[in-house]
Length: 266
Image (cartoon, rainbow, N blue to C red):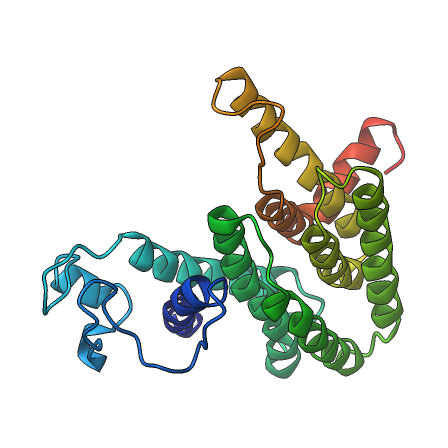
């Protein structure tokens, strides 16, 4: 319950990030305002989801329509946070230990927030801003290090470093070989996701990396078949990298075990 409410608040902040970061604006100042009339949004009109519903999706001052994407981002972030909390409690190596669970959930909630912001920005602008990706490396490294040391598994830190370097290098090679199909933003995001996947283990790393290309390829093929895109269309890959990574996080071990069992190796 608490994590979901916290997710609503973070989702409200992410709406600001999604709108302002691509424009090169500060995410702190000035205060949120109506894009049509410029009126400052009052605190009681800025309650996640609820204010939008009470105002019937319109600005209190000028009655201009406010996109439904704002409450959807807020609600989606809350649901995402709740799912991450559930996964941490049920699948982490520290079941039932509050301090350890808190240390493990924190870096993954951070990744969830970064994922929402980057996915939406990439869909809007086909970019993955350095202002988000690069600082996320430092925050992720600190949080994952604290979690690994506290649960008594320092080996996870080396695995995280290997995972980050592996995905970064693989994407960099693809970007150099096929620059029109892979951007440097994807390369930098790959390194960040590799840290998390490597920290969890080799199965999540492999599944998470492979799932991105599988899902992205299927989506691109559907667009081509339905005529909504052609071979020259730019299709953002960042969202699929993020979805693939989260599939690796949540289901990497199960998918790897199921695949190996087909060949009698598990």
